[in-house]
Figure 1 (spheres, one colour):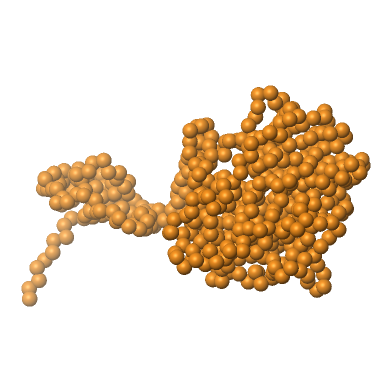
Figure 2 (cartoon, helix red, strand yellow):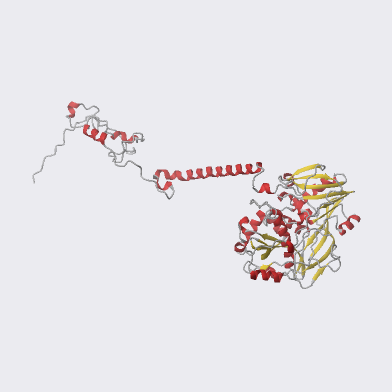
Length: 569
């Protein structure tokens, strides 16, 4: 095979250094090298551009060019006329960028050099979104507060518990912010008298669970009393004996002690008689009922006749608590009696299991407070008797609370209690305060739910839990010294008033209370709306229970029935 000679061409010699000479003329170039080929000296650490870039699109003149590519850009060289013509006529078939994927985070398809910045950018984006959401929530909140026609919760609770008359004279206005800073330490109370009789607690009720639920019975023949302070014959007797200067009940004291947690409006009547002070409630007062979902953010229906309205739920909760407090007892006739019988019951009348403890606290050197406190049952453990308070939480519709008791109560009881603490913070705090005032050894909380969300007559017990009042108070952040600090400040303020009748009203829309001076005959001739007897009420539809369940309810209600909540003298 005959080899063919390869013409290398003339290579100029550079005597001054390595590489081509500084100036090359067309004469000595011998027409073998391009005229405008640049030479860029570089070090090993310098970044080199692309010698041949087949992906560049010269149709897009606005593209940012890499400075490193300029050393090898021959498009302007006159030595390549054919290449210039080709470049002017060359067009890509498809100049569109590749489609972006519709799934997955975008950063996954970006260049690797942007990956270290991804976390910072993501955090900044999340911060911006969180700030936008907060601004939106604040904007909606202020709009709802300023708009009187909105349908949110603030509009539903704007009604005052008592109608303010034009002749009433406002003496003082106290914001709740001042209550949170108060603190007062009182010594241990002294028991003056115990009245009534207690039945023993049935400990088998503690084994109730959603899989082994119990029907809630209705106690028809037992009477429940809600007597105010001034109508209590024992308190009248103690006042005549000058046992104290301030008189109240545990319901009224707990309302004042937990005032900062309240949302709904309430009122307490104050009577200054001589050097004595009586804290009373009106007939048919809201204090006789139990608020439901008071501190919840979910609005309740505003129609009063709706079974899920605030008023209807309060009446339902009061009935449930009365019946539940009697169903957890051992009804064998064995009772634990005290110094005197029930002061409100007639002879031979069947009354609910309750004991009244008249206790005295020393508020100051010359000031004592006497309060009537209640306990509902007694249990004997290790030959020692322990007093119990019994209350019930009620579930009406899991859509409002977001937690279904039948599914969560057995496995996530803590979550259920946390939800109730959020939605009913004031009610639970008042129950705890009442147990502390009575020095109860245990407070029992029952979980009672409707058989069907639209049936507010029939209920079942899903569980019962017991707590020590002091431990539960610490769990819900209820400070005893702060409770007594609020009472002491209000007592001191009322003792400075002249003799007469006053009313403390919780503002329906603001966290504050107002003290009004009212005429002496105020609230004495008020018309009290009696609750409609159950026989005359509209019965629920058949969707709440089938025929077999209705028969079972009828069988369990032959011997028991509800008693109205209103005050009985």
